[in-house]
Length: 264
Image (cartoon, rainbow, N blue to C red; front, side, top):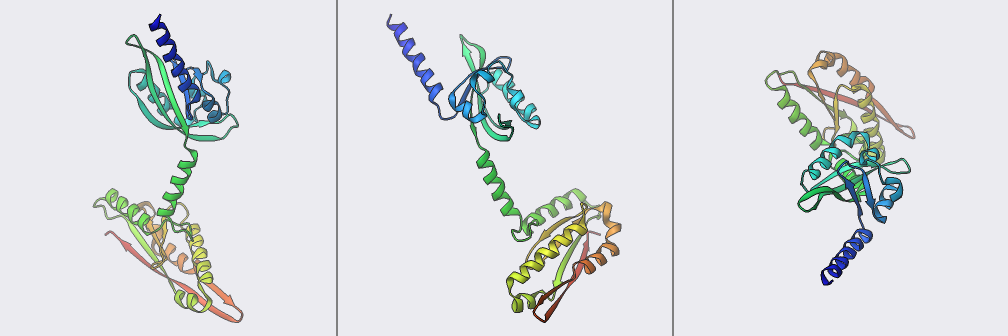
């Protein structure tokens, strides 16, 4: 009698933990179908427990994440506890990021299903992406910054090996300092943004363009476009990046100074 009461109390404690946990908690059968979930899971997914019950979890997972989510389920079904990130589709139709922990449900030394705990990490992922972008891009022009360019250049040099087929170009803006001094930094910033946009258009999809304030624009050019670079592209840069800044009756001419550096 005492044992029965103890088991009842333990069962009620477990149920209370399941129901009241602030994260989404759910159970799967061995086939990956939802068996139950708590109220927090309903809030995370936008679906009711009745709607989820009996459906395979991958029906709610974004297509590009289904394989890795299935792999995590399989590992838990084989006895592992695993935490991973995935992306699901909310009931309203928008994708959202999840951190999920799956672990096996074992009864009498036999795995009969899985427990899962999940939380919505969409806001965190967006913040991480913003921090990464700010660390690797010039916020004025939106171009990759010097650190990002150097990293890509190192990777390109390593991939190029000893073939000597890589070209790097640095574009300086002659006459830029007087504009900052006489017309102010807002005008100088506008010229930097304009020249960056034009360099992006001219580079099309073949070059990696970055921005820096000391040497405003640099490009890493892969070997398949190298013959196209000299002299056609260099001349295009000189022509198209020329910019006139006008305040009242004052004109300032900005020209480009293009330097190409090859690995051979």
